[in-house]
Image (cartoon, rainbow, N blue to C red; front, side, top):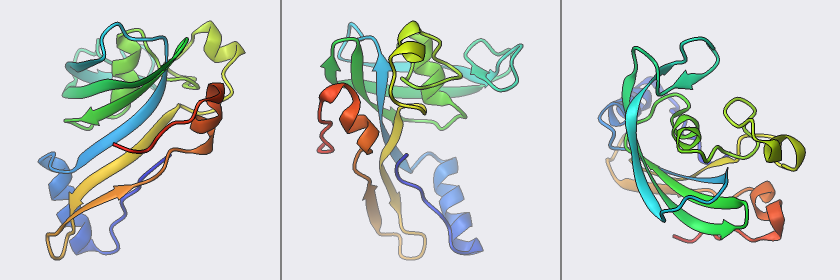
Length: 168
């Protein structure tokens, strides 16, 4: 769920693609993860590519991959669940899902990367609990900085009976 950026014409598409290629578009996500990280924040870095045996998945163990960096910080701890804010320095397919699973805190509801007992038996979120919360970019025609923000979805708010704040 969350912010989606769409180009209305080829010129806009080219300008946005250029921003993505030099990583100048800032993307901030929120995710509900299983478990509670020991640290309050961290930086995850490595190569992400196709999983060696499962073509639907990506992996940090791939023989050929692309450099990926994710910064994260805990926004709330709720027993066996944790709300994490994630900032991408790169944008690889399934990057957040791969990185969080690699450190033992997979996203709730993620049927590909989270196989924990809680995910199968108790999770009431029926999708990967990942929300594209904020995007900062330059408007393609006039170059003005804009920030787009989408409030967290209802399934985040309802999960475990806590309220997730969308304030930074």
